[in-house]
Image 1 (cartoon, rainbow, N blue to C red):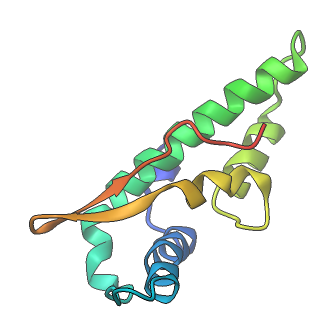
Image 2 (image 1 turned 30 degrees about the vertical axis):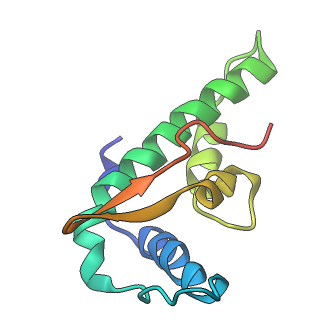
Length: 116
């Protein structure tokens, strides 16, 4: 599972998605735009959320197809779709947010969220 913790374009896309729409949606207060400088401070938190989601969704899939075992192909498919906003596996992304706590950014929300 070491591949989960390597930075990738999906992680950058996820982070930009999380930061940018909030600045457009709020008419009360303009928030800061996405900055690549923030990525080192939150990427471990995002990878942790992704790992939790993959585990949760694999267990959910196992329960659906029981007594059969989930195949390696199905696990790979879940992992590949976990950050693809066009796929159901990525619904958890819409439930998390970045919160500034002091001088740190924290990823908050949704560790067990997915579409049933």
